[in-house]
Image (tube, rainbow, N blue to C red; front, side, top):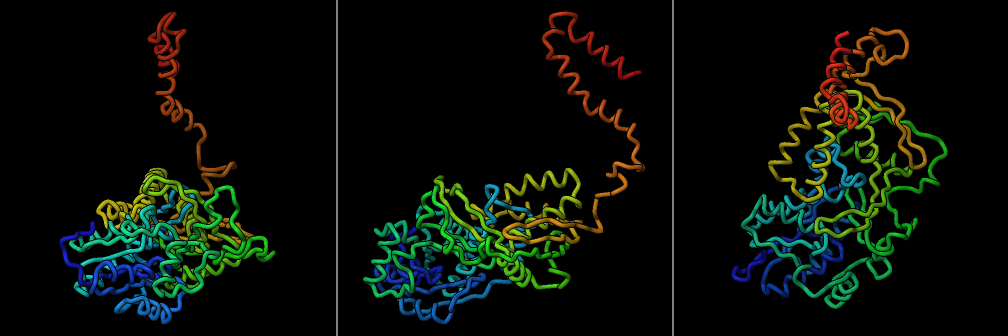
Length: 426
């Protein structure tokens, strides 16, 4: 919470170059006369004119702008653990925005400590999830810093009013206008779209809204095969070529975008309780999630896979809520690392007009044994199933006898249970 008693002399702002964070700079200088505003922008894979962004931040009133390239750290320390966990929020969202916020807030805190700042600020609205993600990271890494959240303090209540404020204060806003009203977030993993006609859940997204993926109808008429190799649950190569983590995501993004895969239209439940509609493009991520899932199906035993599936749901909730820097998340990762010990192998995928088709999977640790699974001659003795079913179904049979009303009215369940016991002894 912002303190009225503490003098604010230097503020470090999470700066994206967008409308909201651009107008925050002059607003902060108005509210805290004499305060210095330092911007921090993290390169997590978005395509930006970084030189122009710095000029824009300075023109808006910032004293300096840190531009930090954190793409490698983003993939290795954030995307890969999330992928290995199989975290998908509400069955559809691959958490592209959610997973980036803790890293961005961490870098902001690091700059704040370096600059000996009094406060940190962000441009998240009071309705959204990002305010929670940023501020939980602040609390985890630097709880002594004051937090300034302009959207919870100022009188601006819409993007239209924000545009008016920018024009009144001479803030350059580029091509943002009342007609170009989408709110977008872009990084190496995905691009999200909100606002505009998407606020009507009955309206189909416009074709021109999509920025990362091609129209599936216009995709090539021929299938394209892709082989992804994994080691211990993490991707290491594409089509037999060893690649660095950032290169893997970039390569699969290009391939997926070419064939129009990775689009999701989702009405999700925000942390504050309301429903919100977003459209997400995650071409490379969609490929990796599906491929890894198939590899797990041949390398993980029933109990390990079952527990992993349960934890994956919780892991997704934790990422969505911004609870990255918590002992609980680290504890789940410890399980995921151990569970993925034998998740090594290759998955063959076919991309075709918006579809990700599994064509094959193999692993030196595969638990699939063709001889056992075959309907033909095998080492499996079918007669062994009789005893297994008798024991496995004992509780079911006992329950049926006890709860059968006719048995209770006549001779009682004890007689029938004795009869069952005698049957099994034969």
